[in-house]
Image 1 (cartoon, rainbow over the protein chains, first blue to last red):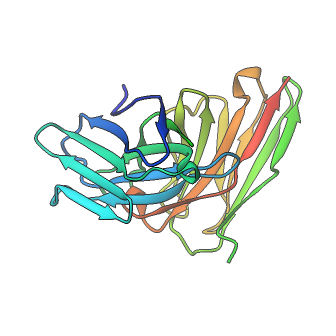
Image 2 (cartoon, rainbow over the protein chains, first blue to last red; image 1 turned 90 degrees about the vertical axis):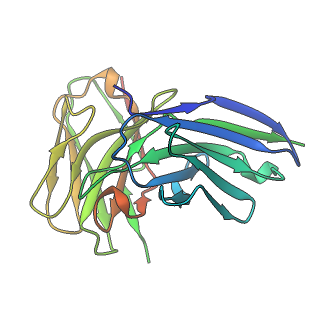
Length: 112
Length: 113
């Protein structure tokens, strides 16, 4: 049973455009929602994260929007650049020493 | 500061062979994880160790065993490799569980022929 559903699987965006990746979760006990970025040949790395006490978190060109009632959260990349081309994973966590639950990933390509 | 170090980076095995993937972290983290990454399947948790001395199964544990050798090291063993275990394997660590930032190694690309 997939606890975090991520869409789309792949995304092509023009340079300067907005990239939007969506995730939905089922477990209402989740209380930490990070996004990880992975470049080819590398391991994933934390990009940005949010807790459900806020509806939005912004770090530079990257913004997480969180909708607790809909059990959805999304990553927005403003002014997308070719260097943003990577695979993005959403994830969720709920308590103690349990591990993160990852979505299946979105491969983003930003073309000039 | 090396972070999370995995060895080897690449490996080709014949069906039925065994091998151990090594992972070490130098951040004094309590929790360590093994994931496999396959196209279209994302990151799937194989095993994790919440703290030294404990290990638990993840989503896809069949065909694998793990050992938390000490706080720094967490190894993954394939006893009898199968072509279905062809994948990229990532080790990760975090301070305490999934609520703290996870740091990943560079991965091991394993091919079973």
